[in-house]
Image (cartoon, rainbow, N blue to C red; front, side, top):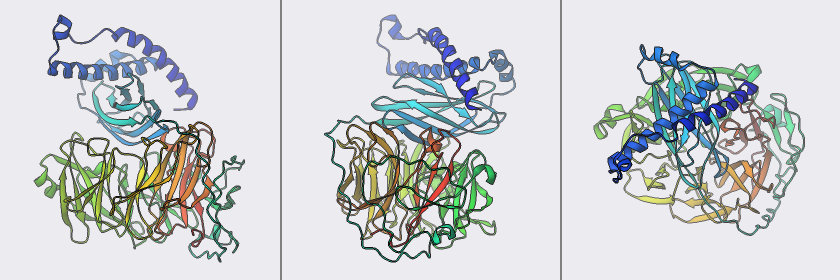
Amino acid sequence: MKLDSRLALMAAFESVLLVALAACGGGGAASSDAQGLAATPAEAAAAEEEAIDKALLTAFDAAEAADGNDASVRAVAKATDNVLPNVRISAGDWVVANKTRSLSGWASDNVAIKRVVWHNTRTGQIGYAALSGITTVASWSVDRIPVALGTNLIYVAAFDAAGNKTRIQTTVTAASRTTPAPAPTPAPAPTPAPAPATAAELSPACKAFYANSFSLVSTLGTTAVPALAKPAKGAATAEPTFKTCLVRGTDYVADGTSGFARNDYSRRQAFNADSTRQLVYSNNGFWHLYDANGHAHLKQLSGPAGDAEPQWHATDPSLLYFIPSNGIGMTLSELNVSTGATRAVGDFAARLKTTWPSASAAWTRSEGSPSADGRYWCFMVENASWGSVGVFTWDRDTDTILGTYNTNGERPDHVSMSPSGKHCVVSSDGALGTAAFSRDFATKTPLLKNSQHSDLALTADGDDAYVAIDYASDKGDVFMVNIRTGVRTPLFSTYLSGSTTALHVSGKAFNKKGWVVISTYAEDGATQWLHGKVLAVQLAANPRIYTLAHHRSGANGYWTTPVASVNRDFTRVTFNSNWGNGSDLDVDAYTVEIPPAALK
């Protein structure tokens, strides 16, 4: 749908919605409370369920009326179609930290998905999602859902043309914070002594870019973003402020990918074992293979689709692991991206059903990774209604389930194996919070009281580290926890002069221990030194911090988030950008390349 059409529909939706809300404002089922008696818990729960369904139906009816659709058509379709649609939430992110949230996912139906709508029970607000099309399978996205401080229970419902509805829910916690006194700008890190910059791991575009005297910029000042025309695909461009080699890796229009060509997530390795291939995600849910050196679009992969959680093999540059979308079927497959051959490497269904008879899906919920060597994996297990039943660890080399953990219905936001393979980290907004378990789940190390943007990395000494932001801390600290010792170390503050920012962490530079990439976005308040940038951050007290690039992506929903991801040896960092044009879909992947010896 074009932007002007969407704006017109939104205006009509708001107008119709006022009428619809007024019409249903005093409605509701009769209860004991209406007769002057206290409602029983069962009656209160039923009334709450009815209110949720009513709000979602109101959103659907208002959007349909705003679009000029007749409800009588729905009644006719209902007579021949009573099959419920499916709906999934695959991603969510802060647009403005602790204020507005984006959500996106997939929906499917036997005939066609007509609408996806949402309702935040905390604020009472409702709205509709943008759909990729009225088809049997469609992606959906919501750019901005306002949230209130505390816990926000957000329902998402998919409707088909007959009015059949399926709803799911997610919890978003917005942390309150105090505004500390303005913090001083961190002192610049000492400039490392110049060293010869080898370019063996750099692409041809950047191979001759760097002089022997090059050093990364460690001055953490607030700098204006200079104008820079969108680079041509594949050409080396000098990042004006930080003097790094910047290459546009995709051109979704010329490459023929659908809607955009972007890096999927910061916690997933975009580059293969030798950084010769790059994985890119398109708007229609398919995965694409690019030549990471010449930047040619090689092919759309056959096999992985949707939330397939692709993971590169640790040593073989041709091999890629993936699961069925959303983990339905509880298998893990291996794809040879050169030959197209696929084989099953893990079939968990029968074994998991022995422990959890209702088990239907095994996945990390899109944010997990195996150990750095690819041997150990951690998955969360859900039933057919997406209720959580447990978590398990698995040894790829012996095809052995090593341990299981009952979640008792508390659904984690995601799970992941630590780089060493010693810990399964379960990240939840419930009572569990974020915690690291041993492979057999015999021991538990608490890491954070809730689930936040984070990643798992290796310290310089080779210990597992949990790196995250703590919005509930006084200064909005980015911090690390050494999982072996449990010691928490603050890295830097984000609440500077009353400002806030959202960010992502990538700890996938397993061959460059002690460093992570952090990309910031969706800032609120006066511009600060860390805003709108891709940063290399040392895992140490008073860390060295180098700025690699301004990402130039104007926040407009989830797809525009930079979600920078680093390769294994920290010579390439890919990120997404709409290059400041404000579009929610005009997004390509860019890569900053730095010499192997640049981080000191």
